[in-house]
Length: 501
Ligand code: CUA
Image (cartoon, rainbow, N blue to C red; front, side, top):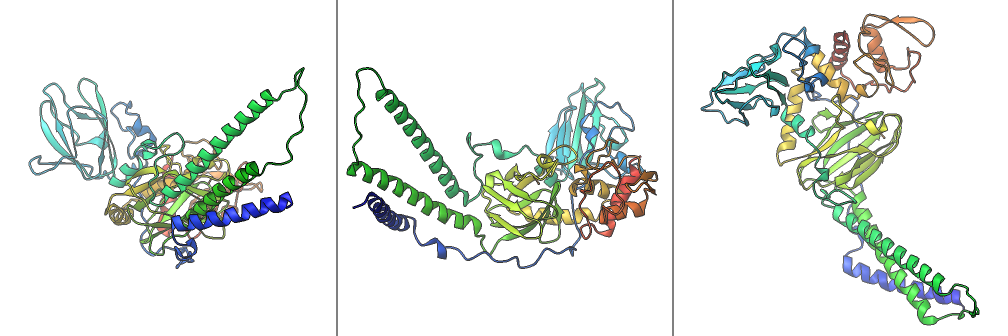
């Protein structure tokens, strides 16, 4: 028999036997294991019916620096200086309150808005508010007092001995997104611990391929070195002719690799089919990506740039992009999927453990690719898996939140949540786009040599038709926000730009 026929025959027979064994061991044919992917039942609506909601403004950057002396510029709420002071701290009776935390002196702390903090001070320590925004935060030495923080913000205080403290009050879901990510707990050198029910198989495949590659790399390299040394040319040794063939050897090196390949293929294929086939019953979330932000739209219209999902429930993402290729990547879910303009792609996972996890863009999408989804205080967008019931609470609380924000605060929140901050600063420096600071009411130069007054109409036009009147020195890369901002949101952003004096 010719060698080529002999090899082909051996491979074919071995592959068939190995396939039969693999199919027997791993169960039914994957073709009927899952229903085929369904097209999205409702295309992404351009206008969401229910009120859009987002988190209230996060603390201003300067607030994390409690060095400011007692005074009006302590940080919190400087943008909203024209607003009447909000109710922020209320004293409650300690008897029927369940304090979330107890403080015994001026320290930094974080509390959920509307929760109660108990101050139990030793005789030598007192607490004095730093500024008007922290008014009410006053406890005499040696006293016990329970205070409820009823609005978001940073509350600065100090003691007579010049010790300083800052309490940050945030919505409970904002505390979750600002947590240290849980990716680094558990896991190993290669990957964080998987939090997706269907990730075990892909992990096993990963380690199997890694192990096999390592084994064969070491074995082959060692054999090469050994044979090179053993059969090196040296005086007194004559070259000998190699044997033409060796049946036992040839069958071994054909049969064993064939079995390995068939098992890898079979197992990899069944796993792949499971990974790309979302269950038909799942929580569906729309994902819109652009340079450089995420927008996750939930069933009740709530939009956020962090992804919130329920635990122990399959989650299906329907994703598209406004401009260029992006890629959704949640390492703990072992999910990575390209997001493509003008079409929808899908990803799904089944979160098994509540926590805060990393979420990144895994496709180079321009200057700020590595900063995609960055927030005003420098944190990146995250994936939050809620405790049972938490997701529903998040949806309800977020929806309620948006309706009660004053325009400036709404604009400030949108500045972050709509990703304006990726290109526009509020401190006067230029980024990809012009700064927002101290520009309202001024004349700005245009690329065609003329000038335009920066007023409400110009801001509005620039959001809807960004390239209509573009400014010299900045690339024409801003995407249109047509259909993605409601009227009150446009007004909010204008109010925020006005407030940046
Ligand atoms: Cu978006 Cu990289």
